[in-house]
Length: 111
Image (cartoon, rainbow, N blue to C red; front, side):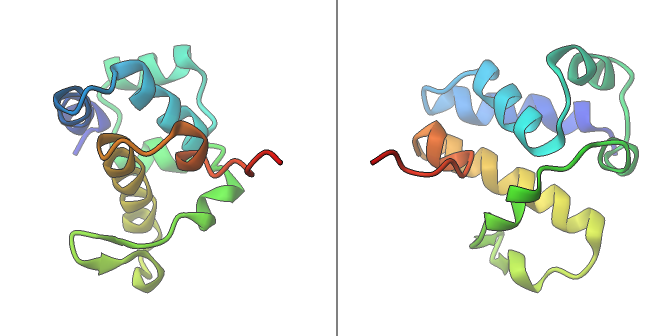
C-alpha cells in the first residue's frame, strides 16, 4: 500500500476538523525527517509504507507517542513497520482532535 493512498485520507480527516494539509505535512516531516520536497516526491512516486519508513530518518522522540490506535496500545505492537504506521496514525488522530502542535510534536512545555 502506498503512503499517497492513505495520505489523502489523513488530509480529509483533519480538514473536516478545521486543521490543514500543511499541518499533516508537518507531523509527517517531524516523524520521518523528510523535507517538504522529499515528502512530495515520495507521495508522487506512490512509495510503499515499507520503503517510506525504511528510508526515513525516524525521530527518536516518536517513542514518546503513547496510547492506543484502533484499540491497540502502541506499546504492545511488536512488528516494526506496523508500529511506525500506527505512530503516524496517532499523530494524525491528535491533530484531528485539535491537540496543540507543540504537544503533538512532543516539544517540552515552556516555563
